[in-house]
Amino acid sequence: MLRDGVYVLTYTGDAYAARGVFVARKAAFFGVGQTGAIYEGSFWLDRKTDRMLVDGCVRFRPGTPLIFGGVAGDDGLIIPFKGQSTAGDPYLSYVYTIYDKPVECALEYMGPIPG
Image (cartoon, rainbow, N blue to C red):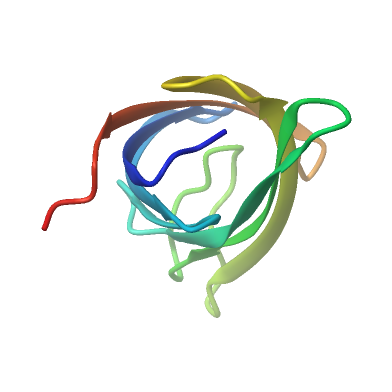
């Protein structure tokens, strides 16, 4: 399960690999990817399966190259996503499918939220 804190996310798709910084707090997350994409959503532990479930979305600015190929259009792009992973700590890895293309993700805990 994610604990409150700061994380680095490394994600790899068909087009390229990138990194982002994420903050998790009280079962919610917010992050910024290296292309400026904004991520937000929530997560919870399914106690029956001991898996962490994620429900979120990512917002891309117009013209942003997409990790799975292509480019966000003139109006940008919002993609909802859902996923799950083992409830490991401090390192989680999982694969999302976006537009029928796999995106591999690795999330590493860096430390508590400053301040």
